Length: 319
Image (cartoon, rainbow, N blue to C red):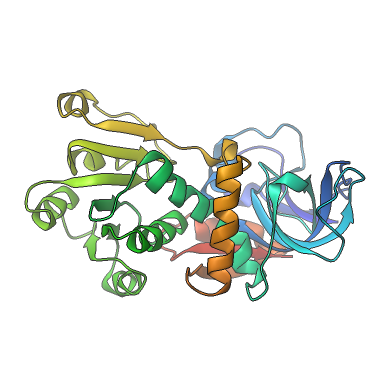
């Protein structure tokens, strides 16, 4: 099969399009013919900074496609079924072998690119807002990087929950599109002081909850938080070391929660939540936005585009 592989970490051009052996369907898993793979933040970080366990390594968390083989222990999946899958590697390829427990059936009416982009972004956003953040109706939430995959998901989910939704964004056009998804107030981080804007919009109180997938914005996120508020940090798309002064948080009795979805998606409650959100997306009650699609052969270009931090939603690779 063809795949996008790399031998050592580095910039996007370390990815190369090459032939590799077909994966073997595990006894408890399925073999999928990939139709769309979403580029996740973890994919970019792994390619850039994590030495692969072996040469010709296939990166990638999320992919959707058609099952072409089923392991002998699997009873609830069948060849021909459309599924979206999650694993810590292997999505950037024509074929993918994955445990059946890490797949979700794709509802009728949901296209495969959207299916590939939903589980991690929306699963992460839901976990940050509710399981860790404890968001309640009427509270104010600040979402950093509102135009990213997690940000777009969090805006919609927080709006549906009855929260007052603030988000950082760059540019009026992107802000307008986010308002159409349920955003109450856009803060252009290029032209405004984010902390001052949050304090103005909350009449000096601060946000009840901040969701931060950026990393380099953590200090500002804490400063925008009210006393006894909650900060959920969930990634490091900024690429720097996560170092902040925690003394102000201690003095303000604020709570900090970390989220890594790689260990959460198979948990029964999280799995069921993702299933429900797939159904909502199929009816367009939730919107999964794909900024741009690239062919698998152009995976290096796709990674460069996704890493430029000027996208709206997710970038997808199509074999």
